[in-house]
Length: 353
Image (cartoon, rainbow, N blue to C red):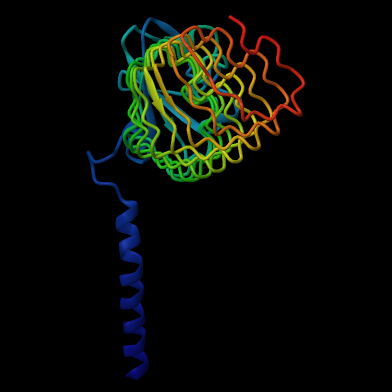
């Protein structure tokens, strides 16, 4: 009797274990998801809009080869396209670029100079609101040369682990506004050319930037020709070594207060304020220049500034002062009595007009 009961118990346990598996394997009629629906549910994607008609090799010829394995498919007009297909995208239309898994780098991703022919130049807007970005460590050259780009939605862009932002928005010449207020830049080491040649930008909010780890800031705002104001009062520059060309060509800036800058580690300040010819106020009174080797062209063509306080400059390490105050037409006097020029090799055109 006990053996018979034991067999019944085993049978019931077996049924309880196997029944849920069978149920999971059965699909209810009418509930089968399409391939696209399933992909959309689980995929991370970027939405890209184009200015003109584009013949598109599903992006896989246009993107750097390192991304081909990471891009899973393209959605256009509610249809999925794979790597083997060609696609004509009409002007003003968008595509969704889907990724098969979270990626660590978007280096060169929208780099117009790496794209096939016209593709990179035709992008007018990019939306990252559905993109999983928390794994990213590299964003260098990400939008480099996207000259038609007018808007980027990166409000939900997670930058916590990114270490390289060099050339990130370089040559986005039609970008008039850029919201990077949510950026966490605490690990970023390289910001060279980050906003270089963003010629249409009039202002940019960097009040949330943590620059304590940054080593390179050269050409960071180079040729930002329409930048009217720039507040860098929160910048920690204690780790920065290179600042040459940092504000080169910012010829609409009227005032610039860098009194908070710690420049004790900087070795290159050449061309730093080159052609900032609208500046009437520049505060660099706390600059520590004891490590600086190159000051050539530092204040080149500075023809609106009437006074400049550099009495605190330690020039004991400087070897090049050529063109340092070249064409500073409005300067009526300048005190360089404290300059140590014992190591200077070149003073060519230092005060030339």
